[in-house]
Structures are given as C-alpha cells and as structure tokens.
Amino acid sequence: MSSPVSLTQYLILKQREKGLIPGELRLLIEVVTRACKRISIAVSKGALGGVLGDNGTENIQGESQRKLDVIANETLLEANEWGGHLAAMASEEMDHSYTIPNRYPKGEFLLLFDPLDGSSNIDANISVGTIFSVLHLPEGATEPREEDFLQAGVHQLAAGYAIYGPSSQLVLTVGDGVACFTLDREAGSWTLTEDQLRIPETTREYAINASNQRHWEPPVHRYIGELLAGADGPRGANFNMRWVASMVADVHRIMTRGGIFMYPRDARTPDRLGKLRLLYEANPMAFIVEQAGGAATNGHQRIMEIEPQALHERVAVFLGSKEEVERVTSYHRDA
Ligand code: AHG
Ligand code: MN
Ligand code: MN
Image 1 (tube, rainbow, N blue to C red):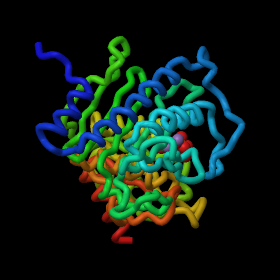
Image 2 (cartoon, rainbow, N blue to C red):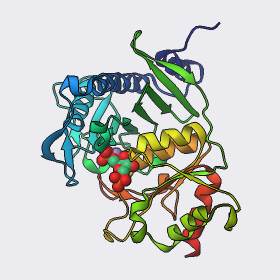
Image 3 (cartoon, rainbow, N blue to C red):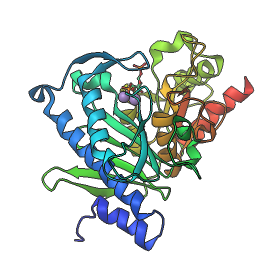
C-alpha cells in the first residue's frame, strides 16, 4: 500500500515537477490551511469551547456576527499577517481590506476569505466552513489599495474551502483540477483523499431556498417549475431537493455527487444583485466547480468574468453540473 500524500507533498509536486505554482504561493496556501485546522478544532469543541452563540456585533453587511465568525476571522488574520507572503487581506467580517503592517515582511499576494460560512447553522451543529481566494497584487502596485482586490475571478491563482463536518475536509484548486484532503486529526495533517474530482455533467438533484419562491424572477420560476413537475413534466424525470443553508456544505455535496446550487437574485431587495458575495464566496466556488468540470454563472454570464465594483459586492449564483447550469442560464437569456 502506498503511503498517504500530505497537502505539503501535493503542493511541492505542483511547484517542483509541474512548475504550476511559485514557492511563495505554496507557503501561503500552507499557512491558510493551517489556520483552517485551528478553526476546525475550535468548531469541534462546540459548547465545551464556549464558542457558540451570538457575538453581539454586526458586520458591514448588517448581519449579526456569531462568536465563531469573529474567532475564525481573527485566526486567519493572525496566521497570515506575519508570514511574508501577503500584501493585504479582505474578509466578509471586515469593513475594509487589511494591509499587512509595516513591522512584517510583505509579499505579492492578496487573500480574500469568508472565515466562517453558514454561521447561522453553528448552534444546531450543522456543517460550516471557510472559503478563500488568492489573487496577485496588480502589476506595478506597491502599496495595496482596496481597488486591487477588484479583479475578475479568472485572475484567481488558487481557491479553496474547508468544510467542518463529521470529518474536516479541504477542497483546493491551483488551476490544475481539484483535490480533496481530509484532516487526519491524530497526525494533524491534511491528507489527500481524492485527486482530480469531477462533477457529473447530468444530475437529478438541486439546491435552492424555496421559501423565497414568491420573490423569484420568471426564469427561475420556469426552471424550478419544470423540476417540480417531475416525470410527468417537460423534463420527464423526478428531481430531488436539498438545502443545508451552508454554501460550503451544499457545494461539497455537489462536488461529491453532482447537482445544481442556486441563490438567485430576487425581488426582496431589487437594488441587490443576489445574496452571496462575489469576491470571497462566488468566485472561489466558481473556480473550484469549473476546475471540476462544472459551470458557474449569475444567470447571464460566467461568474469568473464579472468585473467587480466593490469589495462586498453580491451576485446571483447558479453553479454545479454543467448541463443544468447551462439550462437555467439559457432560460435567463430567453427572458
Ligand atoms: P455566511 O454564513 O458566510 O453569511 O453565508 C451564509 C450564506 C451561505 O452559506 C448560504 O448558502 C446562504 O447564506 C443561506 O441563505 P438563506 O439563509 O437565505 O437560505
Ligand atoms: Mn458565507
Ligand atoms: Mn461567513
């Protein structure tokens, strides 16, 4: 039996043998994923760690912060600020980007993260996760500015998510397919458990918060209506529905067995383009899903080609198995 491959070995292979990533990016990914291990430990302590419940504060998006949102954010900041690989960081839980203080060496990368995704689920002991995206500081930039983060997703160098569930897993892409690692708690290491993950092209499973149905736009009504009609409807097949309300968990299920995940824009907030955030939720997930053979659009265009206008910009999301994403996107075009 061959010995297990650690994340470090996997990344060194990408760096040395394939020349796919610079050494500095490898080290950055090591630091980010080490922070995810710490978050995994904090999450798993649950009520015993005193980490559950509300923090009594709000983030810039007007959402109340759970204690673990703040703990996870601080864990990622502390782990990454002194490493020397980054110019700046941005997070769901911080109003503005965070420039690496002058007392530390600085690098050429930008890191964006959703420190704790699905945090409304924590107290119910349902899977949550961390999502991250790595960009390069634009050419010629010396002092990073917030505008430097406003790059289309196609410029991402790496993206990943950690899911803290029955086991903790890390799903990562550096643009050469997608690999999945499982946290070996005894050894303290992320161990490769699946390489070159592929999302099945066809699916009979979908994920959407159907309680928002009355607010949906016509193309979404049409698409979901056809799925609900089942074997007797135009699709001639029965579809099953799942909704965890943790994007990481819903996307991970799709990575594992196919499906389509949707968080469309709707009429509740006509000025908003959707609920999920483009830079640290939709873009990294779109990169991962595309690298696994799936697709990701906002109903009209490829998510990774959207030119961001603001750090916390929101976007409609349709991602997962290619055929279904293409179908719901074509319904938007028809409308
Ligand atoms: P976060 O906890 O980082 O704010 O993200 C929550 C997101 C996402 O994880 C999930 O898909 C969606 O919100 C669920 O929204 P609803 O509660 O509206 O279903
Ligand atoms: Mn989130
Ligand atoms: Mn979050």
